[in-house]
Length: 261
Image (tube, rainbow, N blue to C red; front, side):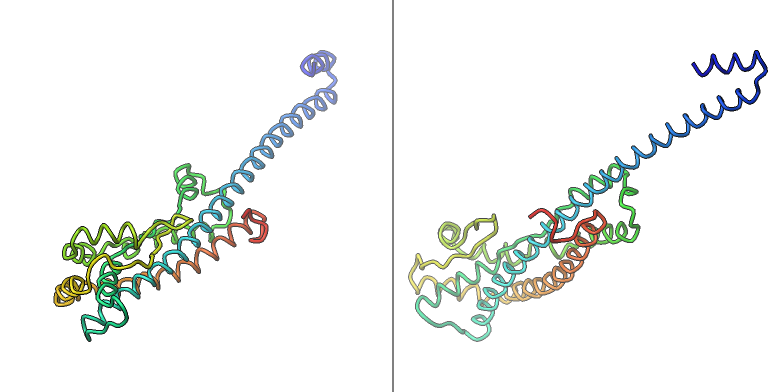
């Protein structure tokens, strides 16, 4: 339609008409391109917002995990201290004292690694769409956070774990697994008070053998020290994760209180 009018204007040498028609064409192309750009920008903004919300959700999962691990490690450390106190001073008291020390030696070997939820971040990274997060400082902070969470201290399995279990008869370990330990309602690990399945004399014999092993007690000491370091790292990382979660929500246009539970 426009082309036919342009041709007609050319035939009649109506240059002003030709100019007007060309301007209309150019404006139409420009508006069309702008509309495409606006649509693409809206789609990018929507995708970026979804990534930010998912990252914030992952960070909240990390915070929940950190709380669980710190509580668990505190209990493991308490068991370990009970074992070391007996090895150093022969300290034990109460009914079934030897069984309680034996149980403490075993429970001190429990581990709970930390593997953070990096699903959304890795998806964003693999898609090459970091540009969807406009805040460059936030992008850099997220990258550093996920690098730091790979600290091997948070996933170590100590030599003490293997070596102390080699000294405890299997039937006792089986009893502990069945009666003194279990999964919690949220999939966490729970320590359970349990009665002794053996005599105090038998428990004392095993405890004496464990406590007399200087190398093993050195491994237990190192393990407790490692848990102290891991706890410090996790407390720091929890602060970082909390800050990043709030920044991600703010970048997505939400406050922490508005995020889905």
